[in-house]
Amino acid sequence: MEIFHISAECYPVAKVGGLADVVGALPKYQKTAGHDLRVVVPCYDTKFRNENEFECVHWGTVKLGNFNFPFSVLKESSNKLGYELYLIEINELFNRPNVYGYEDDIERFLSFQIAVLDWILARNQIPDVINCHDHHTGLIPFLLQFAFKYKNLQHVKTVITIHNGLYQGWFGFDKLYYLPEFDLRHVGFLEWNNCINSLAVGVKCANAVTTVSPSYLNEINYAANGLESLFNSVRKKSRGILNGIDIEVWNPLHDHMISENYSIENFEFGKQKNKEKLCGQFDLDPSKPLFSFIGRLFEEKGGDLLPQASAQALSEHFGNINILILGSGNSEIESKLTQLRNDYKGNYNVFIGYNEELAHLIYAGSDYILMPSRVEPCGLNQMYAMRYGTIPIVRRTGGLRDTVIDFGDNGNGVCHDQASAADICYSINRAVKLYEDKVSFNTVLKRGMAADHSWERVCQEYIEIYNLIIQQNEI
Ligand code: GLC
Image (tube, rainbow, N blue to C red; front, top):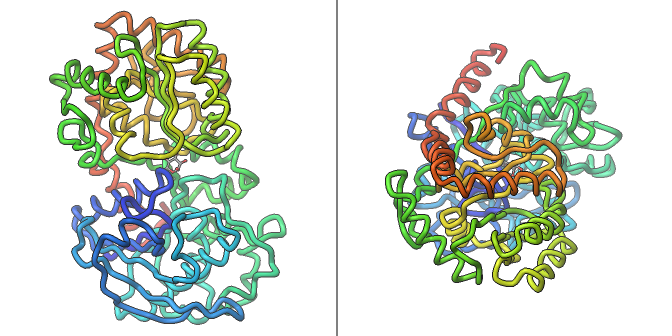
């Protein structure tokens, strides 16, 4: 089966969040399962682009209303990622350091989608399935079916995978003329709340919709930033598939980014060494439990609760716990977190920014990872943490609910229900007690380390859906 994954992010080419990790890994495992895999992402000005060899396999011009953007399709020459990687080079729109956050993001991702389809049309092979990811690729299922110029691709099956339903890629109908000409009888597919809503378009037009965890699929029926009723109406063609993690990249036994390698057999020694290194680097006390947070500092991730929760927990357990935060995002949250440094010197620190290498060391050297998310479609950090013997403390939502069970129920983590500083502190108190009981602590930790979150298990579920839609069966 020939499968295309089309996405705005792919690790290690360009990463903002978990979307990149999934698009970087899932195709590798689908390829190993015997399929023909191609991943297509925009060509940003990133390290990966500049340090690898590419060959140009196609070029053309994207027409966006009155604008014309020349583009090239670059294929990574060595297939080093385990599948064929293609970058869509549209210099005027993508030769910039960041993935998102520009005023012309709508024009950028529309051009990307059109360029991808122009190229696929020009190839002499028709793919079996195109798996789109998030709103940046949401118009593809519509364009394939209804744009006149893609008539030859009309029967290609499409899946849209929702990694985050909060972001939807809205734009006004004044930009309708950007789209390639299509059969106007179908214009209704584009509309949601008087706007063109890219995510809604993908959900309406794709042959199947997947979310990145089963619980998130349930949640978007009542909380999806205005798309609740739409998700309800497409329930029949929807499936929640829990993400896997790339257990080759995330393996404490072979990870070059940590200071001491270890496995479930010798984790006590290994984790202690990493903790000492990490605590040395951030002026923390390695003899006390270390609670860490890694992620984007936004409300969605509960980032706004961290300053208050940290201050409260550090005061209650004065000198007896450490908190370390790695992340960036909302500047108000960033500055509140930075200020706390003055009050809890020696037990608290923060690194504003993102650093992949440091993230690995934090997973290896921490005792607990905090994930107080308001919304978490899947969440990968709790799975990385467990693989590194770090116990997750989570709010029960989305994929966190599906992967973490409270230690009180013989589980692998610490759970609470409310997105509040009080609930986080309550969990931290329970975690401190658990830490003092080494036997129980290690039992919980080992349950996490032993769990199988690999893609091998999961990638078959995607293939099953592809097969069903190809045979035109209901999923
Ligand atoms: C998004 C979601 C996160 C999920 C990731 C990968 O970043 O917020 O929960 O794990 O996508 O699917």
